[in-house]
Image (cartoon, rainbow, N blue to C red):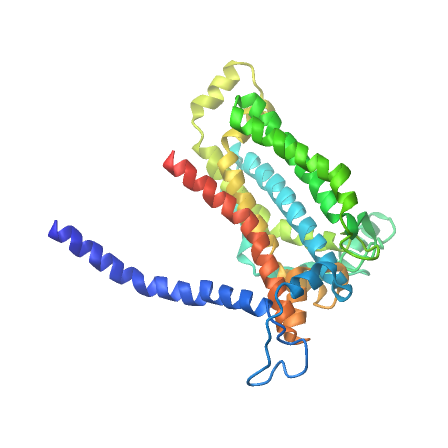
Length: 372
């Protein structure tokens, strides 16, 4: 009993420095950023003074970000970040699983191909951005590939195009979000009907009705977010950034999926073959459902990475290219060029909350699985 208490005491002493350092340099700075975002630091001259004037401004900085006239670029950057996340996750998971399936078939020189697919992860985003900036040069790179086969050179502006698709009015933001949530709750409802969960079915029906009611009626009774129309959408210049990021992180997804495929018992594959399942059915109907935990982990990590794509975008398109904008780039410009520290801190908090939307549910899900 005495040895156990002694070991516990020693363990606590060892952990205290780490806890203090994490509390100060992570959670302390997060708290300080939130405090700064609620002030007016940098809204007037003297923001870089030794003792700058800082007054409490409440949520005014956040209101300006989402409905102020001067922060239209930030709102477009938020839209870009959503598309960055979706395309990065979809492309990386698709190619990662495809590479994992190819290697799972015991190809020759498997070690070479595994290293080849994983190698891009060894590069920093700065190096990746520089390489792909050359490849996506308007008058060179991939645009001149058709000339090698007797065709004409391409003219697409991979990282500077101003063409935009899937546009929507920012005034309809909450209506668009409610439609997306309605689709999510409809999916949950179908899943609860299949699993026979009465609590999940009731929750999904209630939330689905609420979102549909808001999308059809309530939003018409509320004042608009902006007093003017402001169109945002998917800028095609972001395609170049997405391709470079998918190229770099497909090897990461491949490593996860390959480890998961190799961990599946061989008896499952043999049973599927005896039941007449071919390779395609085995991977689609058996392997993928068993790899759901790996997919969830990969989605969380990739979503977190997509919210921190500062260095890749900076290297490929520069900080002043509004077509490939990202909230992290805007935060850098607002904070360290315009010296508007309060607005920059508010942008940082918005990014922090977006990352929490992915991480916190994952932590809760993991904790419940461990307890179960």
